[in-house]
Length: 437
Image 1 (tube, rainbow, N blue to C red):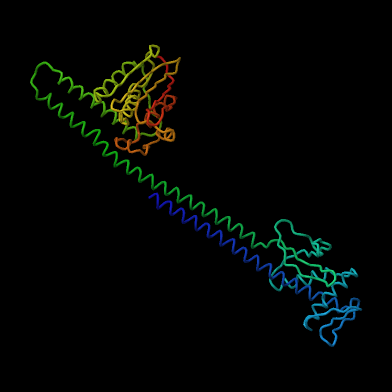
Image 2: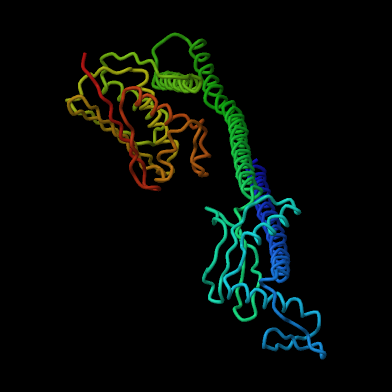
């Protein structure tokens, strides 16, 4: 499932990259096409303009081609040309020099000719014409320079002596701006689609995870309810058919087993009900003898795990604060149960210490178990979260025990913190505001 989701996201990202590259390349191609057309039209318009200017009487001057077909003459000058075809290009150059030197460049006429050429190609723009010298310095301009993104044509070389250049500057066509919006829209759509797919992936993964939890839950219920019930049936059957008389040590042990198993069933039932509940817990707070409750729970686990060492210390100033007895017992049971369940020591140790300062009850439950790595300490309070460790998965569980602890403590307005080092035990520190009735 994870691999399929990640491959799908990678494929969509690849599509996004390919679409972006296609947009960029198409934009580049259209830009080059536009620049090519406008450059050719500028060159053609400049040729027509110089031809027209040469034919005007006030600009006419004597020019000719010698009999050798390689000597171009104008005024008192001679220039060698490669072939007769170079005569008119050379004539345009000297015409430009003549117009520039006499200050007779009619830029309005040139602009008009150029616009007409553009209209023939379906381009209805008003470019600015810029004349530059050999150093690139602008010495003449016709029209207003566009503000913002601009597009320049290729330069048209002018003059024989002066070596000037003319370019046209356009506002970037609407096509490119709309293409930018199209690209942004496509990017937004694909990102939204990727986000939706990612959300769908997590939804499906969550559903699969919940299904796995349900399967684990059935197995856990079989382990925590069915087997204990069989034991209870055996014990009850024994007492139902035994002869009357005094109980011996074995009888007491069997009754203790019956009581411990019943407590275990109660705890599991509370956990399952908690998993199905939503909203805030309803607390029924009454004066509670904490020392008595802790002693009773410790005795229960000493009976279930004879090899374990469980100690309880309750300061005298703790008193009998107002607490929900059932929920408080479940907190302690969960912490002790985890301390014993996730412990690979030959002699598991659990130490419970309760103190009180004014209206703040402090509960510390420490053990010598496998510990919890810092990276998992905030996550262990989530629903169904279990650390990915073989030592953890050997023990049955829903991943709800610490969630239940956090939920109850939070209902009291308290907080839970975790200390210790991985591999060297864990210490849960619980602080709860309490009141005396």
